[in-house]
Length: 446
Image (cartoon, rainbow, N blue to C red; front, side):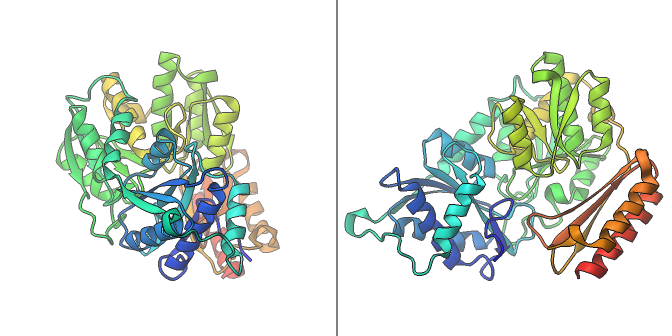
């Protein structure tokens, strides 16, 4: 049987794959597990704006109560707010109900430990055994030992205040367009930038349960690009559905990706001598131009496999403080235990204000090599790495690019996709190479 917990919790089509019955079991299992050392374990629960979030929140909270725990419902808050508030208030665990950048019919449930960090695989495996056990023999307390629910959406302000404290000075004089993706940042992001004195134009802050990520946010920058140009803004900032990612747009309407954001922040930290070992952490997906720009500035890049957990592991192991992914999932580990879209946006805006330059000037310090990424929807992701035809297609592409580029093929951790990325000096060559590999994958895995 496939593992229930994926790379970012449990995800699936809400009410079909991720059902309220499953959410209830997850609540019971987590309460039993964390209740071994605490009689009434406390769970801080946040969600994004998907309509199914209400259903799953209710079922999860009921499961927690059924096992004798306390469910603290934070309402709609960013994912990093859950991690921060869980740790700050001494809860035993945090839970986020979100499918991040996935379409609105999907949803997900992921846990944070009391430390604010994601649960290790060993703990998720223990939870999975408890969830799958039949019959359910976990205790069902009665009378005064039944758990209860409290509501604390007002704690969102504590998180916003904390995020504001990570930057120095004001942002007065900057005109900023903020795209909230009709998601979890719709309250927090505009409030934070206004508090710092920026002139703020807000897009997509009217969630209706089904418009999260719909043609907006960090996965669809076109609307933000048009708004920045129309309003002659200094910068545009976009979060994804659960606000753990941030991408940007410069004053000319050009996209600024996670690699460029990391570089701008890293260069600012190098100036201030606050980047330990002059090292930035990035994944194998990051553009070769990032490596060149860091080298030119006297810094270096530590490379990890794809996934924020690998970035964070490398940061903690090597006592580094800045790392992330091209997708805009960026971690400032002295402030956050996970990717934080609001803190990233604030740090980038602060670097822009401090520089006195235009956003395009900061972004163009890095030369982006042409990079092509194609997602191939497949029936099964299993066994592709051992498929001889796929391996041969990849090898042929690598031989053609030689030392002037690279090819990376990997399965999505959350969707039935295999991703093919190629990087090199000539885009038409990349398009041809990727199309050839993609066609073989379709034939072999569909």
